[in-house]
Picture 1 (spheres, rainbow, N blue to C red):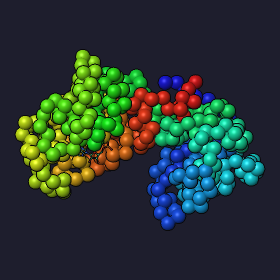
Picture 2 (cartoon, protein in one colour):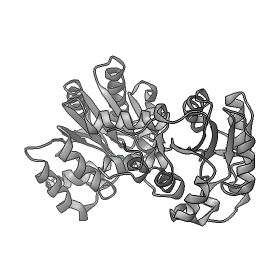
Picture 3 (cartoon, rainbow, N blue to C red):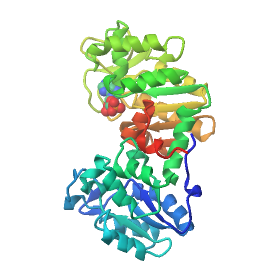
Length: 394
Ligand code: AMP
């Protein structure tokens, strides 16, 4: 996809940059600066253009009120430390005071503006608020993919008023997503796991239309097995979703090969170190639960990875938080990461539990790209247009 980039932006001007600074805080200080570090390439690129940089972000959900505990103020010193330079702070993202501090910045100077969600107009995408914010700068940069599924004043409204560009982190994310689902190298394999079919219906429907193969795992696979008439004992399943599961299997026929479990790991309890056993699909006892994919299923999945050029992954294959039911997820993650590291597979993964599972497997850094943007990543996998991204298209 083509979008405007920072390289296309003017020099020596004031940039309004939307970032994701919704960081974990403890005792009034930033406790994990991953998201601050993610913004550094964009800040540095704008500094190289001698621009003044005004950072816009939301923090938590103050719902249009000034909630002191939800101030972005503690973020300014944490960012200053990473930049090795002063970061000014303005206690509002609009108005004369902010304007004054911005105009006093030297070229390359950085200011953080207070929580955009202190204004009710932010989440309503109120054009009047967007206009007030826009008055503070010359152009707009969006570097917050994780907020791009929301049409808010600072994620979408501003792009209608000012020339708009994708930030460096946004650009990385869009390129990775394009390589996985937009214009992927084929064959493309998907893995969708997790608890339920009902929360990932749109996602499954979009993927079967786009992928060559789709492996279904986790609790949601149980619903598919049940729909095929298998006895799944006491496993988690959505029995009211069997018609939907059948419709997905029908729709996939001739288009996308579905890989469902051929063997499973079962136990009567979901406890660490629980007595678990592997069995075929006909061997699940009435009091047993399917908690992970079995070794033959994993072997077939790894073979499918070896035959694929691209992998897109969301959701664990089993109850990965409780060993030994992390086995299939960990083995699959290690194989995908090794193939990606060897340059044989473009492996893109995302979604909250998926990031946790890849970290648990110790391979998140070896994947081609891991998106930490929960909701935005899922909506993109569902094939939905993200308003914050659409606004950047050239
Ligand atoms: P999701 O948020 O939909 O990606 O679901 C992730 C959750 O699904 C994790 O907490 C897993 O423990 C859970 N899960 C995966 N496989 C199973 C299974 N076979 N039975 C019950 N829960 C599962």
